[in-house]
Length: 236
Image 1 (tube, helix red, strand yellow):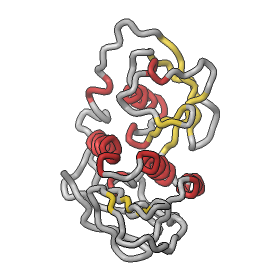
Image 2 (tube, rainbow, N blue to C red):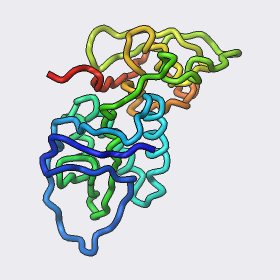
Image 3 (tube, rainbow, N blue to C red):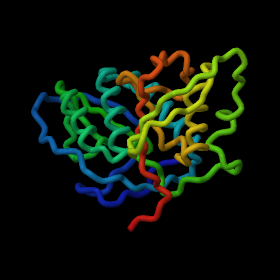
Image 4 (tube, rainbow, N blue to C red):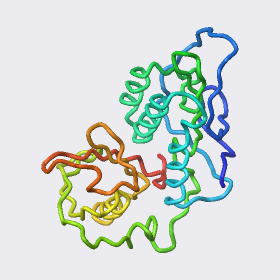
């Protein structure tokens, strides 16, 4: 499935990938908290992943994470913080953690604790893309995203505000399109790969399988698009 075999620039030594779980300590002692590290974890997958495969792994984890115990609202906060941190908005990520009373003893979201002492572990693939990411042979993020039937839908335009700045964009879509399909259209228009996009409306993350009509976006209102940095760009 692909696992972590190396991390660089960790403040407290190498971080190994975890499958995602929570556990309760034997005592309720307080742990030392640190601010979230302002750096991206770099790692290499055992088996190279495509962008679509990485997104599917992330969706599967976040969809099932509450089953590992823990509180759903904490898992939701961790997911939102992970999205913000991947987009290099560490101030927002820290604010989300503080608001949920989540502590990060090693400065990374790989190991977190809520105010009750419950331990939460987030796998590295949910925090950043592997350095050996593969491109789809077709040049698209996922064939299914661009081949969905849209009969019976209503044409409309979504107003998008990108975290990269610039004026708002109007993206022509269909009410029966999924958010994943919309991400593919934005990719074609602005050259932003779908795996780098996280869409929010009304403070909620819009999942890839959600239909546009199910998002209930009020005409004229803005959908926020958090854009993660491109891991394929050379590092200076």
